[in-house]
Length: 494
Image 1 (cartoon, rainbow, N blue to C red):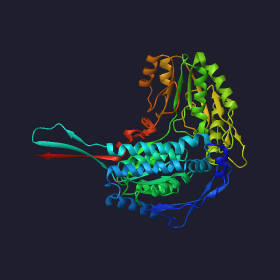
Image 2 (tube, rainbow, N blue to C red):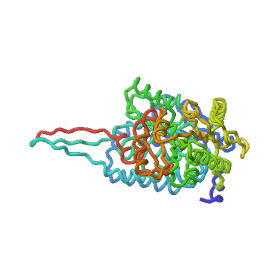
Image 3 (cartoon, rainbow, N blue to C red):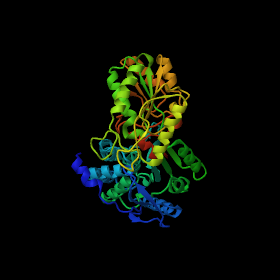
Image 4 (cartoon, one colour):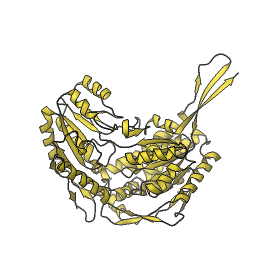
């Protein structure tokens, strides 16, 4: 990655985008479109198609035809594996293009997007390519004269609704295992960041994925998203996003065909620092980037920092210095540390959360205001709050912005109570030199992920999923395949 390479791509014209249905790109049936506005400078990049009910129905029917026709679902596993590897090859060949396109769309700093978007997506497709021919059935222990077989079969049509913060990474987490299991996929990107996934869809076709196996409908959540959730011929719906939308999707499933729904709904993740943390300076640095990277627009962001009282003031001062020195600016500048907020609307929500926290008595130590390093763009100074009480909204509700709440604790039992004093349970962390304490905290914290002496970094080999109101099901790892497979029993009398 170098600045010259990025500059060569940052101003390339982007064509208005259509829907991908049955291997063909087309406008929405009613001709409706949505503007794509870059958070970098507020300028319109292009338009995307705004799919309606008829478009969604055509896409679902295409996916169903491809599944029942067996062009993918009954393709030999070794051949499906080759296609998924070719998709990874094409992502890698277009790495710079995909990274810059995504940043122009959602504002993530290029240093992060380079690795977390096309870099991650290529690795995900390779991982699940290698899983294709390792999805084995089972033979059960049965009485003599009978044979019990457990077959693992693809479910059918999978609808994936993907958010705007890391569209390629999260999209790959859903598309790749669903395809590896033999399903057909209908992808609905966020209307706020669709461009990189639309480009990925074309790369999938170029790699030899049969038409209809991956269809893409863009549009609003209330339009295309709800149509997918209520469609009677969608078998599985997988979603990453907000809790209120997740509840709506569950209701839509209940009121339609009882499709399986897998949800990852964010969190208010506790990051617990004990006074025996092996390196307090490192804990401060990693914890700061655990909330401020991508302007805090990370599902697993460590937005609640719980610090043992004896080191509280020292750690807050270290964080103050780090937050004050972070370079917020043009996300396509390789020296930028924090990029843009995804939209003017999200920026307004972040600023409102800062104001509410101050009104409720939290102390703003640094940041919290809007910035304009690029005219017309949406940027925010990383905010650091202390004197936060557990009952404040800042300690309870996800902001999804660069806003860190610091709360003190007295001892291990107090830390556990504070960590679990949440309706969420997605991620967490513990900093300690005491191995026994680390294991106790891993068991005690109610979260799908517990980091120890770090924050962030789990790779594709381990699952990501939440408990409580952070959702159900898992992305990543071999366990994600379970979302997209049915078990069928064969009981044979010999």
